[in-house]
Image (cartoon, rainbow, N blue to C red; front, top):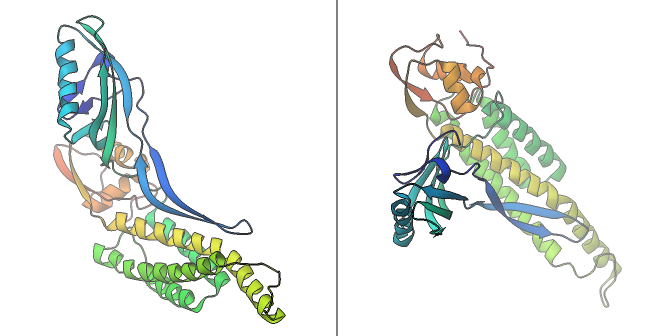
Length: 317
C-alpha cells in the first residue's frame, strides 16, 4: 500500500500492511416483482463491506503490538480507520493472532463499518452537476408524458420551470440551489402516491382475462384493462422515482458546502487531480477562489467545491 494504514492512533507497518484492502459493499434493495414480469427496485440503504486483512507482527515488540490491538477489540470502542483518501469509523469485529515465535505473530482482523467518511465521487471527471441534472430532468419529463397522471404532470411541470430558471447550478449560490429541493420532494411525493395505487392494484389481482362467477363481463374487462395499465406504469414510475432521487442527491451534494484545505508550494492541477481525479478541473477551484494562475506559492487556504463545474480546463473571463 502506498499510504499509512491507521486504526485510531495505531499505524500498521511493513508485514502488518496487506497487499490489498477490499472496500466497497452492497446496496440493500427492496425488490417488488409483478405478474407479467414487471419489477420495481428501490434502494434502501448502503451496507459497507467489512474491511479485513491478515498480516504478521514482527520484531521485539510483536507481542506488545498484538496485545494492544486485542485490547482495542475488548474495549469495543469506535475507531477511525484511514488509508490514503479512505476514512471510516469502525469497531473491531474480530481479531485473532497466533504466537508461533515471540517475535513472529501472524494475525487477522475484521472491522465493522459504522460510518464511511470518504468524500463521494459522484460524477465522471468533466461531467458537471448541470449535465447530471439536465439528463435526469429530461428522463423525468419524458416519463411524465408517458405516464400521463395529472398529479405527476403538474408537479413535474413546476419542477422543470424552476430548474430552467437556474442557468448554472455549478456557479449558483447555495440559497438558489436549495430552491429546487422542495419541488423535487413534491414530485417524489406525487410519484410515490401513484406508485402506491399501482401496487395496490397489482397486489389485488385475482384473475387476469378470466371471468369470475356472478360478475358481469364488462366488470371483468374493466379490471383487466386496469391491471394491464398498472403493469405498464409500475416500471416507469420506479425509473422516475430513481431519477428524482438522483437529482435530490446531486443537489444536496452541491449545496452541502465547500470544504477548505490548506496547501503550500503546489499547483491547482495537482489539487484538482487529488480532489476530483481530473487535473482539468483546476478551473473549478480557480473560480471558487478568485484565482487565474494555477501555480501556488507559499501557504494558501483553498475552497474546494463539492463537484467540478465541467468547464474542461478553460478558465472563464
